[in-house]
Image (cartoon, rainbow, N blue to C red):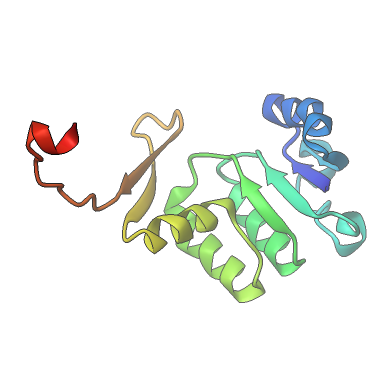
Amino acid sequence: MNLAIVGYGKMGRLIEQLAPEYGCSVKLRLDVDNNANFEGLTTEHLRGIDAAVEFSTPAAAPENIERLARLGVNAVIGTTGWFDQMERARAAVERAGTGLGLAICRGFVEAMGGSITAANRIDHSGAVFTIRLSVPIMPRLPVEAIS
C-alpha cells in the first residue's frame, strides 16, 4: 500500500518508520514547506497513493480532508483539535465517496446499535471519543445452571 503523509512532524516520521513493518511504503511527504497553502495536494502528487495519513494542525486538517476527498484519496486522520469542523469534513467525504477513519468507526458502532461522538478536549491537548453501546442485561443464572 502506497501512503502519503500529510503533516510530517513527529507522528508523520513515526508512521514512515513503521510503515514497512505493515507492508506499506511512504511515497509522498507533505509538510509546511511543500504544502503550506495546500499546494502539495494535487492529482499529480497523489497519483498511485492508496491512502493518506493526516497529522497536520487543527487549522489545516479540515481543508486537507476536503482536498484529499475531492482527489479520491481515502484518509486516516490523526490530527486532533478540529472536531468543530467534523460536519464539513464528513460532507466532503460523503460527496466524494472516499473513506475517513472516523467515519469507518462510526459505521461499525452504529451497525452495533450504538453511537460515537468526537470532541476537542477542553484544554485542546487532544480528543475525546465517546462510544455508547447497548448491552443487553442477562438474567442471573443459578449456580447449578452454570456447572
